[in-house]
Image (cartoon, rainbow, N blue to C red):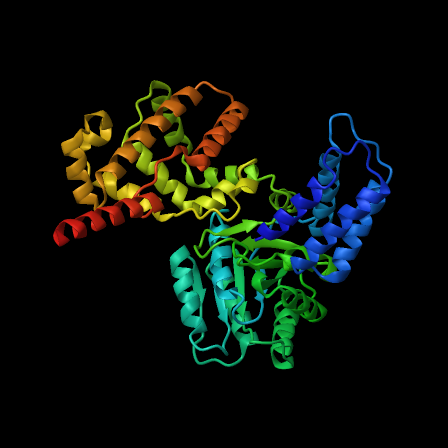
Amino acid sequence: MFESLTDRLNDAFRGIRGVGRITEDNVAEMMRSVRTALLEADVHLDVARDFCDEIHKKAIGLEVIKTLKPDQLMVKLVHDELVQLMGPVNPQIPYVSPGPTVLMMAGLQGSGKTTTCGKLARMIIGKAKRPLLVAADLKRPAAIDQLEVVAGQVGAAVYTERGHENAVKVCRNGIAHARKTDRDVVILDTAGRLAIDEEMMAEIAKIAQLCTPHQIYLVLDAMTGQDAVLSAKAFNDRLELDGIILTKFDSDTRGGAALSVKKITGKPIKFIGVGEKMEALEAFHPDRIAGRILGMGDMLTLVEQAQEHFDQEEAQKLEAKMAKGNLSLDDFLGQMRKIKKMGSIKSIMKKIPGLGSQLGDVDMDDGELSRMEGIIHSMTRKERENPNLIDASRRRRISRGAGCDPQDVSGLVKTFSQMRDAMKSMAGMSMMDRMKFGTQMSQSAMTGGLPRMKGSTKSKQRQASKRDKRKSRKRR
């Protein structure tokens, strides 16, 4: 999301680069480009107009700050206005005592509401809470079955009443069941429709009236653009929403809904769905999203994800190995598996300052990690502990076991050796120096520092060349 908007905004900033003073003419020209970029990103017309007018007022006549260039000053103004547009937001769930805290989920069919219930339950379990999911979608076929599957994936309890037709009674019974079973959070999965209709609105309004949920969240599909904003306004008119959960935030949609919904409805985005896995739900932070839009990365979110997947004690042991240069391929493989849990390689790289804006349309194959795993598993324990043992005959044996070329084995060993040396150098650095060093290493990798493996273009070219030579020999 936002890739096209990021590119267009950067083009607009380049237009005033090198200017000694911000004037009305160059600001007006830049704002025209910014307005066009916002409209192309499917931002609501009124929102785009007010956004640009506000920046124009703040920018006119501003002297260039000594430490900033004009384009940097404008980036700051745009960043601050983006934060204001999407915030303020408090992503914390206000738990009540005594419980249970009742959270009501609403939304249209296809928005990802039931899956989001599971993701939210997983997030709540991580806060040492005991959620109960209540299956109140009695209209859609297999909705109850889907909720049970989702709940099973995250280890949450489910309350169901199959064959029942009164969703209000099911919700009230579910809340009563939560009290009896000492559940401190209840998530009501209500029914949706393909489009807004009076029957659905009347049902969810009655649930809200009689069950008095502490928070009402509307689940919206980011890919529906301005339709999502209109749906949010219609739901808010009947329900008085507390927040919005935007799904498919990792898609290639243009991002207009994320930038428009707070201004149009007055209700903030609380959480965003960033993938299909159950852990792919993040708290929404306007300042971090503004940084992503402007190509500044999002290190805070990346650090939080790393803290969730990396054990502190294990990290200390790994650091001791790093300092001595004793990392093995088993250690390397373990870290790769943890990185896979954090999301796609491209999504991780985009959060690194200085790298996100360079990726563009670069296609990064996440299957590369799986191929590395296959190669490592084809090695003996001694080879994994000491890759220097791997000679030509061992490379051939490992490549046959992994179904790849011997050159791919060499590439992996070379990559690992470079990484091990780099980590040894980083062992005594401060956190800030490590971040700088890591960014430099990542940039080097992006420009061709890391070898390509089977499945990559060069590997495929080598295989095609070998096939052509074999065919040529047969013809002779």
